[in-house]
Image 1 (tube, helix red, strand yellow):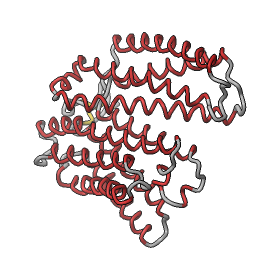
Image 2 (cartoon, helix red, strand yellow):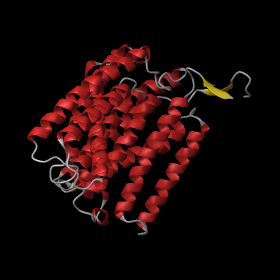
Image 3 (cartoon, helix red, strand yellow):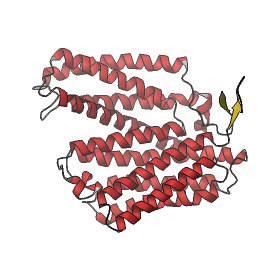
Image 4 (cartoon, helix red, strand yellow):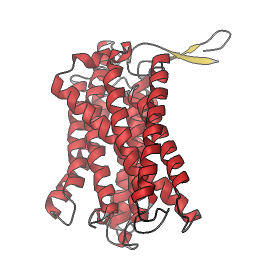
Length: 365
């Protein structure tokens, strides 16, 4: 049986949950359940008619409540986790940078709680069409929704690592965009382009644009964790590229800013700024992908195999779009997926760079 051993990358493995973290998450969850029960009771008394469908669906109220408690849980969890040994380095960050990181972590957790809760209840509505929500069920459902949101968000925000951030980003982007596609008022949006989802003045557009903005904030937060990881790998001699930490972290900051502006400036508000932002993000991705062969020397060989596959897929997508095989919507979605897919792969390999497979007791090398 083989196992992984090394300490080259300090952020490589997610910190284990401590009894204190589990205890605090449980107590906060119980408190959120009480708040949720009261919230559900009050809502049932003052709302005209609660149901899973209709003009004023239960999903919206539940999602709003989940977002609020998630924001509180993420703030408390991320702040208190600085006392953990593996997170102590964050106490040395400039106050403004720590504040920006905290805001991005809180916003993404709150937004993820909102879209995940909303999507879940919209899905339930398809199976329980017209089902009214009486006081009892309003209390129970709100208590469960807010309690679970608080529990999972507190655990997540208390153990933030580079790899956990990438998983959080993928989950957030996927759920947010899918929710926007199934709630959009235009079922033919895909005949225009991907950014068409952000042009409607309704909830679906707010979800789509908000997902891009919050996702951009989270990508910029990567820069701090990535810079620390790369400096550690450079210091240990694993990576030999000069200035790799600054180069890669700067590129991620640019990518995050560009992604945020794609949502801040929808295509129907300013076409030029929107397209420049989207193009800037794609250029930053390509620069990181291509330059990585030189600046990331020392990364596992399998990473470069994956990078070559992403580069080939990107080039093929461009060619197929140029010859008219792909529509604009398909091209945008494919490139969008490739960018975030590469980010996830890069983060995972960054976490194991400098580590080696070693034979365990009774095992083989």
